[in-house]
Image (cartoon, rainbow over all chains, first blue to last red; front, side):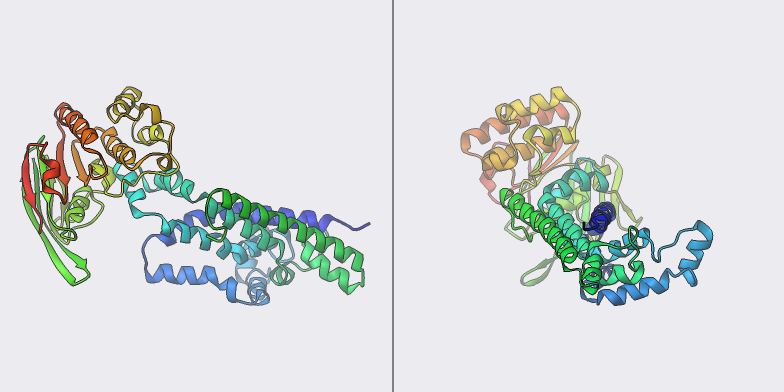
Length: 224
Length: 205
C-alpha cells in the first residue's frame, strides 16, 4: 500500500502557498501595474528571477540565508525559535518565493489592460485606492486571478529542486509528492512512483481543464 | 466661482503643444467647451477633476485652492468630489446599473429618482454589457450625478443618444442643475449639440 502522506503534504503546501500569494501578490501586482520607476523595475526583476533561475540555485541561497548557523536564520532561530531549514514552514517560504511570478505576472498584466478611466471614475466618486482596487479593479479581472491562482497551485505541486534543497526528504514533514516520486524510483519501487505521478497528473489536468472551461465561459483567453 | 489659470504641455503625434487656459466661471452656470480633436478638452476637464496635473498655475473653486503649483497644493480627486462623465463612459463591468449608483451614494430615494430620470428603472439589474450605447451613456451621467456634485464635468455626454432621448434628458438635467446649484462644464466637438443649454461658450484650439 502506497503511503499517500506526500500527496496530502503537497496539497497542504500548494494550498497555503496559493493563499499567501493571493494575500500578498494581488496588492503587489496592483502596485507594480501603476506607473514605472527604477525601484519597481528592480523589484519586478527580482520577482521574475525564479522563472529563469535553476531551482537548485534558489534553494541553495535560501538554505544559506536561513541556516540556523548564519545571519537571518540564526536570528530567527534564537529570537523566535523559528527554523526554515528542513521544516514545513521552510517549504512554504521557498514555494512562496518560487511561485510568486506565477501569481504576480498574470494579475499585473490584466490590471494594466483595464482602462485607466475605471479607476479614475471610482476616485471621482470619493473612493480610496484600496476601495477602488477591491470593488472595481479586482472584480473585473476575475478570470486572470483564477488563472494566476491555478498556475501558482499547479506550479507548487510540481516543485522539486528548491524544496529538496531547503526541505530535504523528511517523511511527513518535507517529503512532498515530487520528491516521493524521485525517492520511489531510486528504490526501484515503480508502483509507488506511478501512483504519485498519476495522482499529480490527474489533479493538475483537472485544474487546468477547469480554468480553460471557466475562462471560455467568461469569453476570455485562459492565458490572459 | 471657479477661477482657472493653468498651463500644461500636451504630447501629440506631431510633437508637443501647450495648453494654456485662463477662465472664470460663475457658480451655477453652464459652460460649453468646443474645440477640435486633440486640442486638450479632455485634459482640461481632467486637470480640474484632479485626474491630471497641470504643469503650473492655479485652480480655485469657491475660494478653496484645489491646485496651486506655487504653494504645492494639489487636492486628490477624492477630495474634489467632482461629477465626471467620461467620454468612454468608464462603467464598471462587474456592477449592475443600480449598483453603479449604490457605489456612489446610499440615498435610495435619490437613486430611484435618477434611474427614473434616465429611464433605466426596468434595466436597473442589467450590467453594462447588456445595455445599449445610449443606455450606457445615460448611466454614466446618472452615476456622476449620484454624488450630487457642486461641479459637474461632462466629456461628450450626448454623443450616443438619439435626438428625442437627448432633448428629454437635457430638459431633466437643466432642472436638476438648478435644483443642485451645480456648475457645469460640457465638452463637445459638435458646436450645435449643446444648443439646448444656455451658457457661456469656450473654445479650446
